Image (cartoon, rainbow, N blue to C red; front, side, top):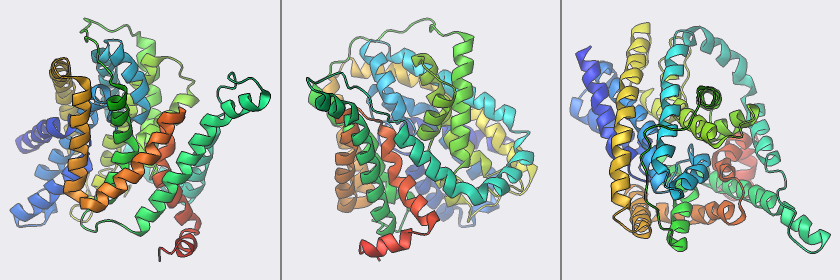
Length: 439
């Protein structure tokens, strides 16, 4: 028990560094820890799961919560928190950045509680759900892609002197959304066929994620010369119990949907759940996104430990499955305990790190902070993937700038995964790859 506790706390404390820095994705860091641990232990990783597994869960839980800091204060989201950027940036520019963090933290804490409540039922439900859903994943992915396009229903139409001009104004956002989806899908299709590195699987897609979701918003901050106003620390947040319940329930629904279905991320799951529950309150939306991101990452790893389900979702579970296979309820209870301990600790640390970040950005020009964030992202990409990764990041950045320029949904950038995987599941992938000269 002491071993599990110390490992969980250690993983959570390490997540302070990777969670509060832009472009530091937990999967990249987890890969390095796995390689290091396997080399140092001089044994198969599964021989001592009560050290590595709680550590990894603490790392994932801490990152899923603490990554709120760069998302809110530096505008550098990952693919699961991209929908949060505009509402939280609005709060930041109103001097309410700490309140945005608090709302997200409430959502994440709600995600912890929901996962703990659901944990006794998962061993009975998930094996059945896996058998039922497995043969139909392709159709579900195609429906998601279709819904993403349909949800970009023409907006505007109020500007212009002629009907044609108003028609162009109405379809500008929709056209940009479709273009973003297709271009990101094309990029993902090439990337899957021509990986830039074979050393670490997640490193192939990491530069594209940084370019699609992180760099464009930071560039916008640099160009616009945004000045962050003084931030306030409210004693309480104006949020009723019903708003919290609505946000957490929608976020859990979307996050768990994303955790269970391959390729679907927390951002897309949160979008679907938000529409299904007709969310129209910013506070509820921010809470739901905090829940969705937490449940997406943590839930996906937690499903790996559900006995008899054999569910491998997310990069971390895929990396660990060749080294350790959970078989008993004891392993499952161990990881549930790690979620509870790490979630409570990360919730406290988030407030501390948010205050420290606010202190920093109030003393440093926000443009300089954004430049530093951009340089850090570039350095991380170059350090892991080299010049090829930088080239990929640059191309992805061009695609990621389209939604910002034309005010369409940034979730369309997830075509980088959705489209190539859907085409492969449909059986068209090899033929298209041959036509494009990739094979």
